[in-house]
Every structure is written in C-alpha cells, then in structure tokens.
Image (spheres, helix red, strand yellow):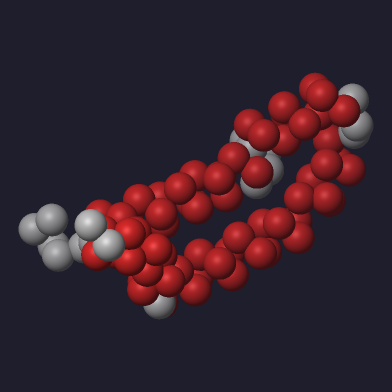
Length: 81
C-alpha cells in the first residue's frame, strides 16, 4: 500500500504467476497430477502444456501493461452498492 499498488491487481498477477509456475517443468506440480490421473508419459504432457504456457504469458503481459483489465469487474461491482 505504501508503494501505491492496487492490491486486487497484484493479487491477480500473483495468481497468474502461481498457475504458470504450477504447469511449467521441471517442478510443475500439476504436471505430475495429470500424469498420475492419465498415466500418460510426462514428455507428452509437457508438450501439451506449452500452448497454455504461452497463452498465460501473453495474458500476464496484458494484465501487467493494462491494469484496468484486471480491476474493471471488481470496481464495477463496488460502484453498484
């Protein structure tokens, strides 16, 4: 708050980064969960996750550069009270 950072925007950035960390190898916990459920090879799962990683990186870049996208819905809900 002392740095004048919107906490909702920061929380959304934090969640996007957290999910990105959970699906990127080699430590991505969600990769091992998918492997345990589907019994597929880890290499196939990693190949399948790369489009989602790229989409999430693009979304992260958009949310970082245009914070109004992340704060529009919460601010419109607060204004209706």
